[in-house]
Length: 111
Image 1: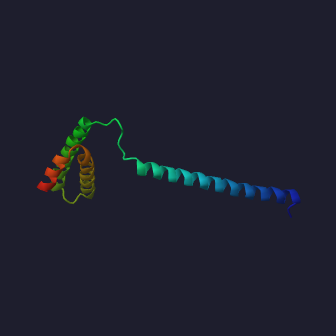
Image 2 (image 1 turned 135 degrees about the vertical axis):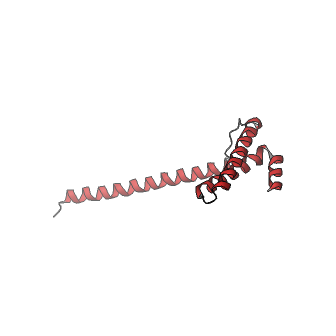
Image 3 (image 1 turned 60 degrees about the horizontal axis):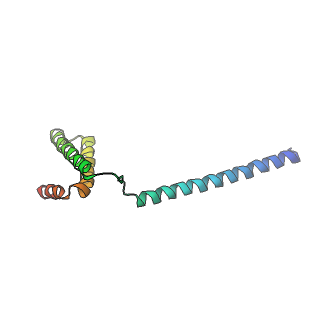
């Protein structure tokens, strides 16, 4: 049978655990909400990005898409390769939307 002091210590530990859990939940909630707000208002580009680097990105991504297209034609059953091609197309479209809209329109019309 527990003594009075042991009961008090046990109650204190339970209360202390509840407080810690509540504080942890609040901090986690604040950090998740803050990250979501930051992600919502951030467009993912750095303020010092220039169109020259964007055109280089477009050219390199275009080359990657062309290379992946050739690989997919030679091995059409490779699912990972198809996923890589889809991701490369997405990346190419994201860069083209801002840095090379005319070229992107030409590529769209060709497809």
